[in-house]
Image (tube, rainbow, N blue to C red; front, side):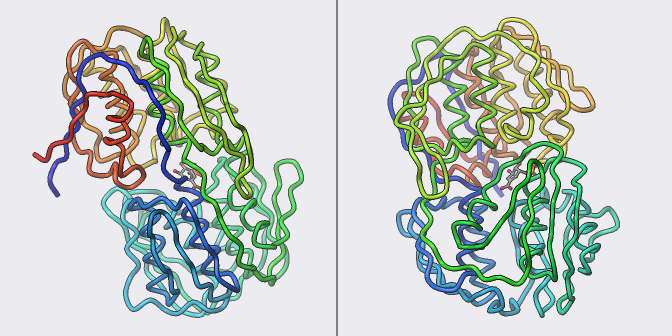
Length: 437
Ligand code: S3P
């Protein structure tokens, strides 16, 4: 694969309005539940990024007819919970941890065997967090010795519901177990140490499935059915995050990010940036299907370093690369703790961000479960995203406050979540280009 390099000019600001592309988490779930439902599900606003497309291809390979995507519209001809067919070959899921972890739950309950594979990054990510509780339900799943993909999932197993206290807050683990729970005998309950994104629960309910929540415990009873329902996918706050930070760090910026999902289990970035002194307003707040949506206005302001409250970590889990760039532009010190999970995302986001910020002249000290960043003047220079889409886009924003251009290497995976990132940045007035080396 060629090295895609993004080069962001030094300085500037962001002004104007853009539509934010569809939410990645909700796009995955819409294809999954639409495929398992009875009837035809129309999805609008589907993210045509490589990750959700990997999920879509997996269901096509299991015999589900899916028309589109055409301008974000998909028509999924549901086959019901028991209508999937054995795929002719291993399912390749690219860079997508969500595809692999969620699919494992429902494939563990199918009558046929499956093998799940991924790219180098996904092949190094921990899967015991799902294989252990799934085994406790009666599943049989093989991994590498290190507990990483490929996953070999044995079919024909009878699953039983469990009560599972999750050791770390993870929507992927929770969703995996709830999907397995649809097929299990009895009740499946997952207890979260802190709230994580709840799109699976909301969408299951939208498809007519009863999901009970009591404080931090979410339960469902196996053996029901899913009824097709239209899904409107809101814009992804995790994609909006780059421009929220870009606008917040640059003087005279004023952007309106339209139609963004503001589910309270996703808005940690807004809370954290506001605590740092950012000027963020939610306009035109409304509901889109099962999810709250708003237009987000962000104006440039002076940011202060803060100690990020640990309970906000799962609510902003994908936004830390962008938030670290905000911290580099803030006055004083920003301290993050309780975020060990960042080390096992698409890259080790603590180390890779610390390396890049250091290259840009910022004092960034990685710790076991977080980072300490001293705000300062970024110099510009070359950084490596290590193939991590969110790190690539976060460093592109750093150009706005650097004294010379920022070159970001290894950016091909921006296509997994935000294929039109460069065009969106142009529309907001950024001077940024993409080249293949
Ligand atoms: C996701 C959950 C999060 C997040 C990932 C998408 C999801 O992972 O980092 O990008 O769609 O459920 P964890 O739940 O494992 O933290």
